[in-house]
Image (cartoon, rainbow over all chains, first blue to last red; front, side, top):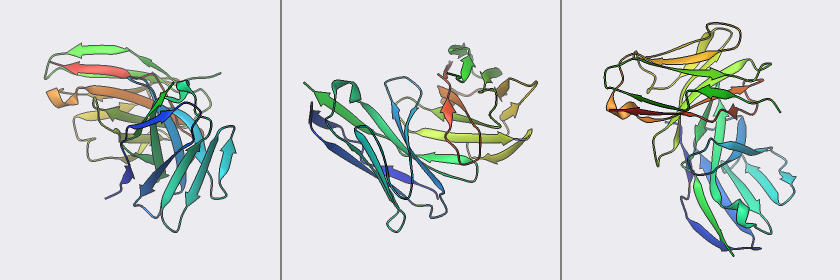
Amino acid sequence: RKEVEQDPGPFNVPEGATVAFNCTYSNSASQSFFWYRQDCRKEPKLLMSVYSSGNEDGRFTAQLNRASQYISLLIRDSKLSDSATYLCAAGSNYQLIWGAGTKLIIKP
Amino acid sequence: EPEVTQTPSHQVTQMGQEVILRCVPISNHLYFYWYRQILGQKVEFLVSFYNNEISEKSEIFDDQFSVERPDGSNFTLKIRSTKLEDSAMYFCASSSGAQETQYFGPGTRLLVL
C-alpha cells in the first residue's frame, strides 16, 4: 500500500520563527515530490517541487532524502500569512499520493 | 495566469441520482486528474487520464464513476448513482507531463442527501 505520512500538528509558532516539517513516503518508486499548501476549504496550491539536490524559494527550503524516503520543508521568518495546512505529495505512475497535511498556526 | 476551472462550485443531490462534475483544464496540459477530499480528511486520488483514456485509477474509482473528455476543453467526472459517502470536495487537476506539477481547480463541493 502506498502511503505518505505527515505529523498532523498543529504547530503553533510565533511570528518570525523557523519551522520545519517532515513527510515520509513508502513507495520507493516515487519519482516526483511536492509541497502544497491548502487554506481552509480551498484547493491545494503548489508551494514548491522538491528536487534531489534540494531547492530554495525565498523563505522556503525543501529537501529530499531518497535513502530514508522523506522530504522536508523549512520555513524561515514565518509570517502570519503562512498559517495553513501543508500537504506533501509523492508522485508515481500518473498519480499523486498525499499526506494528510500538517496544520501550521503562526501567532503574532 | 492560466488556471483550472470547475463547475458547479456546489452541488446538492439526492442519494441515487447521477451527477456530472465539470472541469476545464489548463489549455496546453495533456494529463488530467480527479481527486476528492472528504471534509477533514486527506486528498485522495481517484483517476488520471491521458490521451483519451484512463491511465491509473484508485480503488475508490469503482463502476459508479466514469470520466470523459467530450470535447477539446472539458473533462468530466460522472457519478452514476450517488451514495451518502460520496459527499466530498472534488478537485480536478491538470499537468503538462506525467511527473510535472499538477495544478488544481477550486473544487466542486458535492453534498448527497
